[in-house]
Image (cartoon, rainbow, N blue to C red):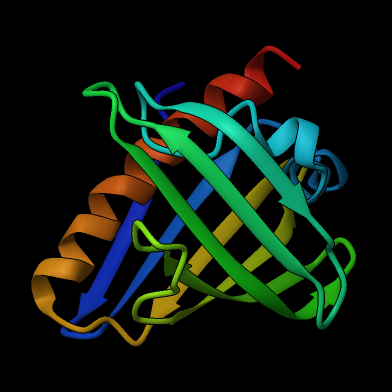
Length: 154
C-alpha cells in the first residue's frame, strides 16, 4: 500500500499527517528512544553521528548528522510536554558552527491509534520565512520516508 501523507501549510507553520503500518506504542518509542531515533531521524542520505534525548518535560535533545555533501548539521531543543504514548511538544532549532542556537521553532507530534496502525501528525510553527517552512517541509517529508522504512524493518 502506498503511504498517504497529508500536508497543510500557512506562511509560518506546517502540518504533516501520515499513517504508519505500526502500532502506536512502537511509533512513540521510535521517536523517544535515542538508539531508535538515530536510525531514521534526518532526511534520506543523512547519517546520524550522535543522538541524545532526555524525554521528559524540561529535558532536552540534540542530534548531529552528516549530509551527503559531508556537512554536519546539529539540531537541539527542549521537551515542553511529553504524554506517553500520545504527544510530544518540543522546541527545535539549528545550531551554528559555534554551538549557538539559531531561530527556535515549536514542534508538536501526536500519535493516534488508527486500527492496528498509527496516525502521526506533526505540527511545526514559528518559521522565520516561507522558504524556511518549505525547507522543513521537504526535510520532514524525507525524514518520514526514512521513518516508514525503519518501522517496516523493525
